[in-house]
Image (cartoon, rainbow, N blue to C red; front, top):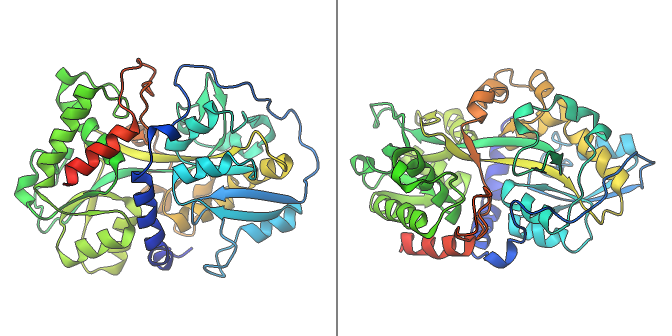
Length: 399
């Protein structure tokens, strides 16, 4: 399947809006407390006949029906196989997805890690009986029963795809290959005005991760569970970095253009962006997962506790994580597939190698996005800082 360069351009505006909306979120949207049992919601015990309809919320690119590219369509084949007519609502942000799920109008959602716990602890989603999802058996084990998609060993969804926020650089300018995030933090003055960074309060976690590995005296255990002192340290580092940042990016095209024009030579990125730049062949770039590890994302299909079409939703969760379809989604979207057998179905036979899809050691170095809460998301206490504080601090960082 061809790389979705056209989709990147078409969704750039939506992505920019998504970041702006996300920056306006507050602690009032972060319901749920790590370490406390979620509301009791029954899981399905057996499948019945499909109800003929399915209403889902999805990230752009996750439920393609041929409208954006007539050759990219996995919704209509599902409808033909199951009789479940699919209605897709595109969610621009995790906050928006959470609010939409709370209306009770949708059967499921492709939730990222900064939404999953909110949905679980608010009782908006139901535990998933993985025995009713045959393709779950061959999903990568390092994505199963993780803090963002399960509670006490009970899965609350089916993993879909994942990726890391890696370090990208232009080797003609950055002649010594970087191995640490220090290249964009402590050592970034060497590239003053040509450093780029992700434009979102969640980027504070990247600084916290660097400090977690390099400043043990701060005692940071999880980059999303920061006390006031730890948050202040991350903010101070980001303010220092700000003096060297030429521009912040919030969508694919902005960073692609910056590297191709030479206005950026080093900064955080997604692998798909590096691939697009490589395909254009206007400039050479390389990526690396630094020694400190990286932040990243892992998306999960979750079923609503109020689903009106639960059988169709279970069929969708199995279908979307089937080898061929999961491969199609991963290549179109630009991420590692959750399904291990998808790697034999990709049109680009080197795709899974490029995205480290089966590399558990690589995946173990990723700290997946989670919305910070006053009740520490790592379960360490109740003296952490909430996302609303991160939003305020991010505005201070950028000035």
